[in-house]
Every structure is written in C-alpha cells, then in structure tokens.
Length: 279
Image (cartoon, rainbow, N blue to C red; front, side, top):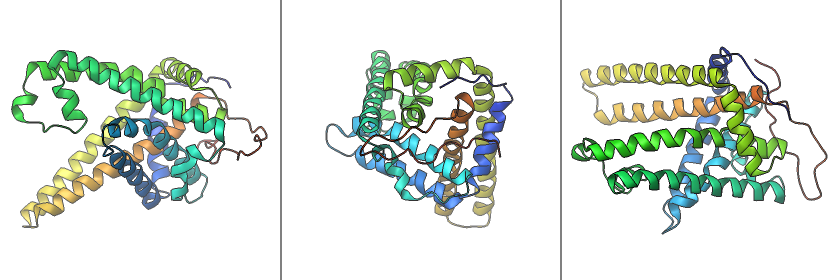
C-alpha cells in the first residue's frame, strides 16, 4: 500500500465525481443512504447502550456507501446487500470493523464528555437527541463554548476515521494502523481536502438557496407548508448522499489500488473495489 500525494485541484474533482456518480444511480444511492441513517436511528433506541451502538455502526455505514458508490461508478446497480458488506467478508475483517466501530464510539463519546466540562452536558444532550434546543440554550455562552470545542475536537477524529473503513476492508490493514494511515493521508493531502471541503460547502449553500426559493414559491402559491418541509428534508438527504458518494474517490486517489490476494478459507473477496481511473 502506497500513499499518493495529489494536487489541491483534485479536491474539486472529488466533488464533481461524487455528484456525477450519484446521478448514475440516484434512487439506489439515496435509498441506501436513507437506510443506513434509519438503521443507526433504530439502533440508538436500544435502552442504555443505543447511542453507543449507533456510533459503532458509522464506520460500517460509511464503508457501505463507499462500496455502493464504487459499484455505481462501474455501471452496476448497488443493492441493499451492500449495507452488510462489512460483515460478509470473513471473520478477521468483521472483527476489525467491530474494533473500528468501538474505537469511533469511544472517541466520539470522549469528545462529548470533554464538551460537557464547559456547559454541564447541555450541548451533548442536544446533539445526541436527548434535549430540545431552545433559543435560551443556544444563546448560552457556556453552550456555545462547548459546541466550538466539540467541533474542534471532532476534526482530528473525523480525519482518523476518514479512510480507515476502506483500509480495513480493501487493504486488510489492522484498525489502529488504519487510523494512523488515514490521518497521515489527510494531512499530507491537506490542500486537496481543503478544496474538497470548500467545494461541498458551496454545493450545500447553493442547494439550500435553491430549496429556499422553491419553498418560497410554494408558499406564495398557497400550497401547504408540509410540502415545503418535505422538499427541504428530501434535498438535504440527497445532498448528504452525494457527499458520501464522493468519499470513495478520496480513498482511491490517496492510496495505491488494493491488491487481490486469494481469500482465506471461509472468506469472500471484498466487493466493489474503488474505481481505478477517473471518469
């Protein structure tokens, strides 16, 4: 496995490729993204351990979208079976993905715990869905300090796990090494990831503007506000699905294409290798 250093302009190419690939199979990719979110939401309802279980599923959900995007880029129709891809490629990779999920849950809960030191846990309660965000709470300086601290701490956490699911799945890298290689790849390609983030920020701002204009037109036409709300939610889900579709291209360009060793007894080869060439 070899790390690639790419120019900053590659970041915008990742954005374009993600959008283009999404529109090859928009219904399938949007549905798969919705199902991953629904699965995590249902897991969070488990008494006592629900939030931790939902967090543990995030690396597997990210991998599922990467595999689905890879299949779509290769002209294949991604089916709901990709949602279980992390659990169908042998016991070793299954254990590694479970370890990766546990590490992510511990890291995220640690970020929330540190933020709670500043505001008594208000931000953590709101973010994890246990409390309602009111105007008074949002304007509380302690809440705002906790929010900014959590955002700052979450950045390195997200970089640690950005490439890790793909490294475990396609390159059979152990979880801790995958975290190290992931953050090194992101830091070494800082320019490309900066452009990538700014590009998606522009897409979301433009999308939000279009949705706001459509909602205003619907309201002026006397249509129900529920229709406008449905459009906003649908547009947000679609843009989020596009974003996750683009992640596989960041992985593809940062690392040497995975080799294809013979699977161990009882294992099946990892499906949906990242696309090898730009489209």
